[in-house]
Length: 215
Image (cartoon, rainbow, N blue to C red):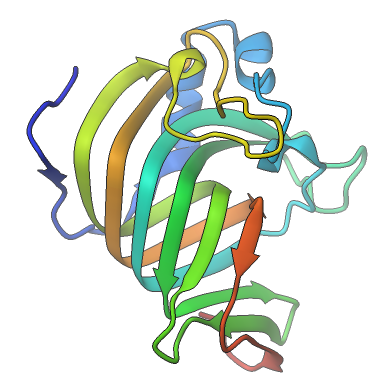
């Protein structure tokens, strides 16, 4: 389906979307191993390193992005990771890639058992800025507004996000469900993430501390 209207709006989230389950169902319709694990770009991709398997929370009052893509993939932990549980060391996640992004009042926290490591930035009038921002999540919630969106596009044909290091497009595997849009805006954003990468990340008014509560 190709949506040609200027914008598509999604109303307030009611508990978010379980991207892990959603991505798994979509991914299993094709060549699972080759299609999900093979990513055609050689640059900054969250899946190009072994994840710890510890989820972290990211919130922002607003995200604005130009050049947006989403597709399913598999992230891998190190062999015999203490965090693998019953996953076999693999996590089915949804990749959200944004060519240029701005985030207002960013908060990131990870639970360390009894305390949290919390990072805040972009809360003093200047937003956090990122180039080629790529996030691997299994839960996303918020109020989303897309402009010029394609839903159901083959992930190997995505063309909205470019790796500045190689000039290659960020893409998923052949036959994998994907969507892309010219512009994305999300308010009250909340994500459960396993990996984040960026070609450039600028965090004004950065603060990092151990706290009693997370984001």
